[in-house]
Length: 101
Image (cartoon, rainbow, N blue to C red; front, side):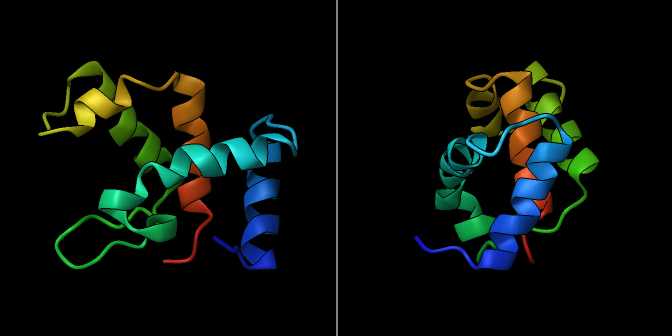
């Protein structure tokens, strides 16, 4: 999968802002790729599914943390979110927030 340079630069800048180093970008893209089956490539979903791209980072992270804690019910997201650390969820939220909707 190829990413436009603008997307990589924006994402890298966002990740650096939360304390990730440049080598973490590939790891975060890998984590985010696991969301593509339901939420589409780079978070741009097909009709009927929630798009993550361009959503506010704080909203994305809040939703992910609510899924992880069980506060927000779901069919599968509560199970998936539990598989990530809080830091990984924050990195994915930053990644998707930086994507073009």
